[in-house]
Image (tube, rainbow, N blue to C red; front, top):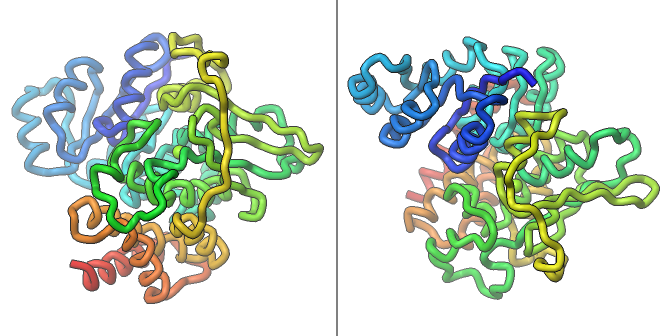
Length: 381
Ligand code: MG
């Protein structure tokens, strides 16, 4: 395999750091061509010294200027959202790792698609808000979309060599998050919600896991990635997070992908596909695991999961409204401004208030995101 150049969007986030761990272990296969961060220049400076990227982007202008002084021409430093677009537009990379958090990932991912690159997609919100447009763009520009989300990577791996018309259903597994066994969620604190039992992730996705909105977003993501209706996508709670998801075929046979929960594996697979590369990842020991268990999700307790299925029914910009309201609600919960159970309430309110556009173009999606944020901020501040 020829060495592949990777552009990492969000290199100091949880996925970005894991991607650099993969690159560090496999320098003959991969290199970090360019890195982007919001404002964490201390960490970025260490990454520049270790990985020697040709360029970096710091979205925060002041921090970008400060980094420029510090690193003394070691690499090119761009800034702002324009810098983010500029770096993806240059196209001097093989793989775009789209690992920004939330709606912010959409615009640069589109640029990578237009450059006809492999998109290693960790930013599920891109497909949630603009799934149809993204899939059409990938076809038009002949860009490859390879999932990094562990569930979708699992399904993608199960489907290698299979025919799409022979799939009966997808079964997405969910850990259940920190509140799987908790009956009443009204008084849960931020630190309780951030305490995920199996995965170490960024704050946004950790809270999404606690509300199970994460699984809802993943059902929408799976719908677009694998072109199946919501009726053929199921969610099952699997607290051990060993089976990362499954595919049932028309003859009743089921394939599953298993491994210990470690994001390095799906990241590496998205980079190396269709090949696999030998690694020292900890292997699964079945006698040590003892048992794998499964449960039905509690849809009364986890209202966000139902909301996600509902917006799939409504189509148009409804998933975009859900996503924007959820991003803001999670942010407000983290800042202590609202309670945990208000998250689905806020999303519901936004869905009732903001108009759904049936066949949106990309400008409509950006406008819908803006309107929803304006509405939520005006009601909850
Ligand atoms: Mg996931």
